[in-house]
Every structure is written in structure tokens, then in C-alpha cells.
Figure (cartoon, rainbow, N blue to C red):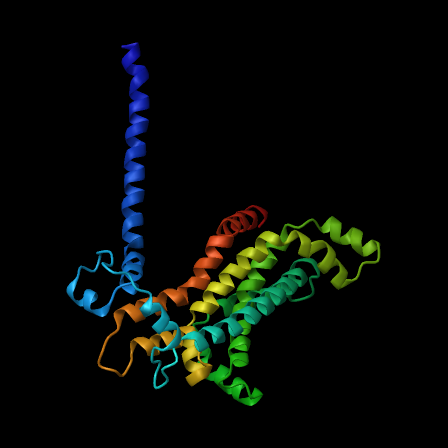
Length: 293
């Protein structure tokens, strides 16, 4: 009896692990199935796509769809591929992420360590701005961009994303700095450190985790945005997501699914790269913010 009692728990744990790993593998397969279809389709010829199984591996893999998507596919009336729009998205996302992250850090610093009368109201209004739907700000933002001469430009999109993302970046940094020891700030003030010296020499070096979280969050949101890009730009100034939509909705009679899939994968590569490189730091940053906030 004692021997059976000692082996049952081990058997139960093994069965539990088999069930857990089986369920994880099942849901992972379901989640990754669309990506698998996109990858294999992007390496097939059109004839093989029409005649073959959607889940089958390519019989004769070819990179021609990738080359066509990058350099010769028709986006609207221009058949120069998506490379120009890819460059537009890079030119948009890098300054927008950098500026919104820096301003969010400064706002969080002020709202947590240099409080002023009405700071709670100010923070509350910025939180409220986080949840305003994109559609509501389209007309006012279009008016502002027109007055500033930034309509239909990458600089205009940078401004839009900085303004819209500022509420979230402020929220992230404010909560992170809230638990930062005030004694360090006061000690620095007694030593004669200025506002920006404290920010640059004390807070920024300790902000690595939350900076990673903010950069990944902003990069993903801005890179994948379609509404602002379609509303405030056109033609050759459009970002990648708008070009991808125009590529799929081509006016030609032939649906080049392999080219479409290759273009979609190219559009997804930057965000995948960011998650692969900094994904573990993203989780660490979230945990650090949760503990300190």
C-alpha cells in the first residue's frame, strides 16, 4: 500500500504535465497556423497555389514573390514595390517612438517628483486622453496639420503619433517613478543638482526596464497603425500598412496571393525583430513596474 501511495503522486504529475503540454502545443499550433500558411504561400508559384493544398510545403520554393513584393509589385498605379513605403514607416516610427518616450519620461518625472497644484487633475486628463477613440481626433488633427503645413507628410504622422501616444508613455513612466525613493531626489537637490541633472543622472539610468516596455509598446502601435496613415497621407507619402492595403486591393484582375503574403511578412518583420530581441526585457519591465507601482 505504501509503495502504491508513493508512486501515484508521481504518475499524477506526469499525466498533468502531458495534458498541460498537449494543450499548449494544440493552442500554439492553432495560433501559428496562419503564419505558417503565409510563409509557405509566399514561397509558392501562383499555379501551385491554385492547384495545391494550402498547408502543403512548396514543391519548388521560389523567392520571386518576395522580390516582386519588395521591388515591382503594383501599389495603386505605381509598380515599384513596397520598399519606398517601408522607408516611410521607418522614417515615421523611429522619431515618433523616441520623442514620445522622452516626453513621457519627463512628464512622469514631473508628475511624480515635482508635483504642483492640480497635478492630479493633469494626470487624470492625460489618462482620459488615452481612451479617446482614434476616430474622434481625425478632424481636429487634420485641421491642426493643415494649419502647421504638415498635412500629407511623414512629419505630420510623427506629430500625430507623438500626441496620441503621450498619454500612455506618461502613464508608464509616472507609475514607475512613483515608487522611486524621494530621498535620493532630495539629497541631489541639497547637493545643488538641477531639474535636468537629476533626471539625466539619477532617474534615466534607473529607467531601463520601463524604457524597453514603452519603446516596444509604442513601436508596435505606431508601426501597425493604419487609420492615421490612411487619413493623413496619400500616394508615395503613405506608410507601410496603407501600401499593403492598396497592394491587396489592386485594380488588376490577377490576385497574386504569394506576393501579398510576402509583402505582409515584410511588413511584420520589424515588429517580430523587436519582440525577438527585446521580448524578455519587455516581460521584466512589466514585472518591475508591477512591483514598484
